[in-house]
Image (tube, rainbow, N blue to C red; front, side, top):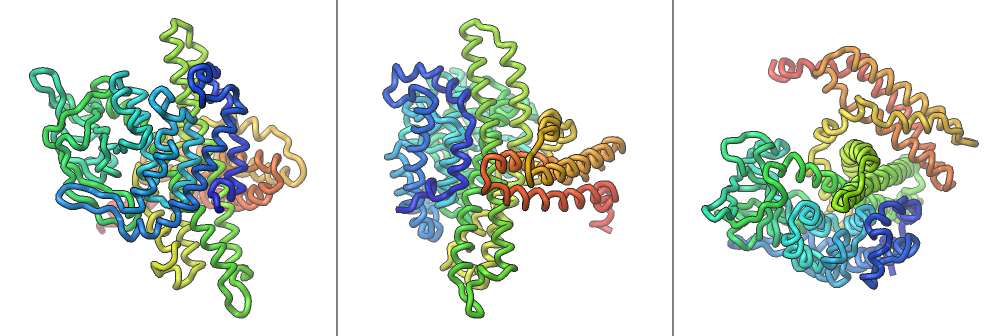
Amino acid sequence: MANFFLDNPDVQFHFNALHLRDIVAIAEDDYAQAKQYSDAPTNYDDAMENFRKVLEVVGDLAANRIGPRAADVDLDGAEWHDGAVSYAPGTRKNLAELSKADLMGMILPRKYGGLNFPFTVYMMATEIVSRADASLMNIFGLQDIGDTIRKFGSEAQREEFLPKFATGEYTGAMALTEPDAGSDLQAVKLQAYQNAEGKWFLRGVKRFITNGNGHVLLVLARSEAGTKDGRGLSMFACYGSDGVVVRRIENKLGIHGSPTCELQFNDVPAQLVGNRKFGLIKYTIDLMYRARMGVSAQALGISQAAYGEALAYAKDRIQFNKPIYSFPAVSNILIDMRVTLEMNRSLFYHAAQSVDRKEKLEELIEQRREEGQPVTDLTAELRQATTMAGLLTPLTKLILTESANKITYDALQIHGGTGYMKEFRVERLARDARITNIYEGTSQLQVVAAIGSVINDILRPHFDTKEQKEYLGGLSQLAACMKEIRQLFYDSLRYVVERKDASFQDVAAKDLVELYGYLLIGYLLLDEAEVDSRKVFIANRYILGSLAQAKRNAECIKNGVFADLLHADKILNG
């Protein structure tokens, strides 16, 4: 039988290369949990074997159950009648099977019925599920709702919500966006107010809420009357059945199996999660690390599916008495798709492990503080981990989601006219990919989120180490190319900084972020090529192509190619 975990050599490569020893040790209380739970690992090797077995189950379900239903899920879609939302029949079957396999609480603690898995392994499962049906990720991938309650809620809230998240009885949603507050969440207006007994209620409208029909909603609401910025917002949990009205679901281009809802809150009873005024500035920002990564996993899964479809079609399609796979114009596209896929995966799992490291350090610090132990050394390590995750998560979402759109575009192109027809899977994949570089922060906002770290060159020590490293054989030539890319970056950065012009910095931001991305990914691929000969070709193609692109980025910055953007208003309205 097919298996989307076992049939992918690159996923296998990254699983075997995971560096989770410290992360797993913290999560397992130095493996003390094995004394309390029969399914807890006794050591790191035991944990990794457990992760592998579960991912094999995910791969089996994805390939043999979820994938075959995806076309019907897209056709049927979610439906809305008189305020009630129902999933497509295939989606209901998928969720039932994932729940039966105990996969709906992968990242939740065993205490509440979860598997207590690292975030990185959960992201690998999310990639695999997304390859089968991208719309299902928007439900399966919302396990972070429960995890946010675990991190910031009270013990009573954890005991109330988490066990049913873990069994799959509850699904969740993040209710952040409003008609006048999309990317600008500081503008949220939905009102949270207390009655005479101090109980909280919610009143207002939310829009574009993924899985807004979920049983439990995490709602960003204005709890401080008279405020207009993020400091007046708090986070609340409520039940969708307690007066939340689904006014409609959106008729979307793609991701049809996932209902996107407009919600009306009619004095809905709610529970404050964490502290007042921290809803945006702490809890939502924390949630964004995972949300960006979840959409990146979705984009990666879509990309893998599109590449597979294009490769199979190119081998089967005969033109001029030979398969189109043999035409250089086609094979070149396929090679670029594969290189992009593998470099994306390298960046993705590097970023996922950075999020894991940040979150486990936070947990360890909290635990030590409760025990009265010093945390000074860990606090410094956490600052570094948070800075790293703060760069890698927007950079990953920017690169992977833009890539997904390009890969699905090229996959459809290889299919020719047949790919434009709904009988072929690639048509759905192209539609599904389009949302990934929009929701959970557009690509433009990811540039904004990353540029500060790039300007401050936070990876300088890392790049210094890599530049001094001796790469042997043919990799030495690629290492020389990386030094050239780095010099192009510094020349460009110096040019931008010395102008002391904030507006020009905004114009140059995208090119600077891309240059930094070439450096990070290039060195990741170089290190992988040292341990796996299969990666030498990937590193070669990527780095040589990046050098050419880096020259273009640098020229655009220094020669004023985009200088007209500084006067865009006059140009567009002249």
